[in-house]
Structure formats: C-alpha cells, structure tokens
Length: 421
Image (spheres, helix red, strand yellow):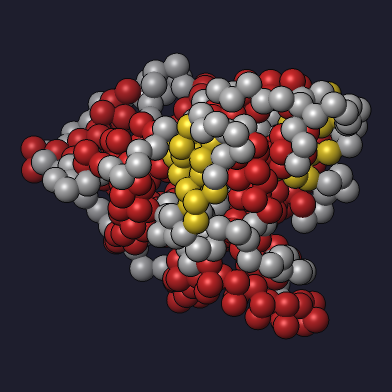
C-alpha cells in the first residue's frame, strides 16, 4: 500500500511503525475470511482491510477521528485473527492500538459513551474498586428489567456471588514442594483476582507441587491491557510500569526463571512491552527483559513434565482457544497437549479461529455484536458434545459462562485437578 506521510509525521515512532504496517498490506483480502465482525456485518469497513484504509486516511492526513472512524475502530475486537491469516506480515495489533490512541485523543465521544469508558478505566484495573462495584451491581440486579443496552450487559455479566479474596491479595512467596526446580513470579492481575481467584490458587498449587517457587508481588496488579484497548495509552503505561517495577525487584533480587501469566489477554500485552516502551530511556531495557521472561501458564507447564494423579477422568473437554493465546501469542498446541497428557479427551471447536465476543471490555461496549458471537461460539462448542469447556482466559470464561449449558473452567484448573489438586 502506498503512503504519503511527511518527514515531520514520520518523526513520531508510532507513525513510523504504522507506516511500515500500512506499506506491508497488499490488499489481498485474506483477512476478510477470518474477521468476526466482517463475518457478521458484511461491511468492508468492519474488516481489517477496510479499517486499514480508514486508519491510513486518518493518520496520513493528520485528521481528528470522525464519528465514522470511531465506529469502525471501536467495532474491532482486537482478536488478531487477521494477523494469523495475513501472508504479508502486517502487525495489525500495533496498527489498531495506534488508531485507538488517536481516536481517544482527537474524538469527542457522546457523553454517555465517555462516561462509561471512564468508569470502566477507573474500576476494572483496580481490584478493590472493582469488587465494590460488583457489590453494588448485586443490589441493582432486582431492577435489571429496567435496564437496556450497555447497562443491561454490565448487569448480566456481573457475577451473582463474589468469591472470597484469593491467596494472592498480598505480596506472598509460596515455597515449592520438594527440591526447588525454578522460581517464577505470577501476575496478580485485576479483574480475574476478583471474579475467579481460584485460578491463581490453582496455578500456585500446580507450580509448587512440581517444585516451583512462586512469588506474587502485590504491586503486579493490572498489566494495562484493559485500558490500552480503550485507547488510554498514558494510564496503560503507568499500570505497566508499576508491574515492571515489582518484577524487576524480583529479577534483580533472587532472580526469576519466568513471569507466569494465566490470563492470555494479559500475556499478549506483557509480551509486547518491549515494543510499547521501545523509545523510553528509562523503561526500554526493563520492558525487553520482562517481555522475554513472560510465559503463559501452558507454555511454562510444558517444561515441568507434569505427573498425572492415578485416576482417569473420562471427561470430554471442548478446548476453546482464546484469541489472545492462539493469535496474539501463537500458542495453540501446548494447552491441548497438556490436557491430553492428563487423560482428558480433547476436542477442537469448529470455527475455533473466531472470537467468542469477550475481547476485554468489548462485551460491555458492543453488546449486540458480542451476543451474536457468543451464540455462534456456543453453538459450535455444542457440536463437540463436551462434558466441560476449557479455556485460558477469564474474559472468555465470563462471556461464555453467561449462557453456556456446559461448565467452563480454566485450563490450569483442570491441570491442577488432574495432578492431585
């Protein structure tokens, strides 16, 4: 694709990076066949290729985002299926991130939209605030019939019962059982530690059972992914720096063999820190070191030679491959292989490349599209006739669990159970 950026525009590193990605696009259209929003809406502007044209026009002409540009950028799930499909290596993740930041900076949204996005940014990354908000949602549930659209989606997705805070609420070190084989930091997280603290607990049990010392620094909360995808780049950087500061203290202290992440959306973000902070004179090198150490729990677990307990489950598991894991991190084999090794019968989901509609805050901001994608995903899952659904991302679990007839669990919870947890 030809571009016409000026030298002054290209002095900005984000614009230079976007120009490289725009030039790499050859208009082939392969991405259309794997884009969830194009599959549903059939609008070229709601495909990666169409959005690339829109983004090019906006950035090249140095224009504020228009209502139409914001509409089509907002409808992107950031599922990154297009990156898996693209034969030209367009790094769409960086391009859509740049576009979102530009929209956030230059477009004045309607008041209700601004207010909701601000509310999500002030609540979701902070566990104490988020827990309080979910408590308030329980009080509003009896009046759910009075709500529509986004407010109804928020109430629907709020859990009916909040679990007790998990073991990782404070900075903690969990000793390995037997000789120490490795030392890792576990991302404490934000929304997951409120909605499903059992996932972190299962991760800690699995790792310590196999000789891994686990440290959970209290400061390693939100990685910044949630607000980054809202276009709030400055807040995302602040959250990322807080997490990196906590991890670097461990790296430079007793050392780390890995930074283990059990929320795949967070893993994709953390592995991209090296790019995000590439021009930062203070944090560029720490970001590269952190990114290099980041491992999804399924990645790290493959190094441990997990030992199954002497029992057979006989369970059929439909493995839902979260977009951030299969497209963002290119991890497709490891989770299924681990589950199969533990005695589960693992079945792939038809149309497994398509997003379930969770996508961070997408199911709150675009509930109509999200609901259609969830229904499509659950219909495909049902074809596998599973006893359980397993996935590696809390967003997918919450999204699918809203209407799924089959229990849904995190992959690490099954691995923990299968090895004696």
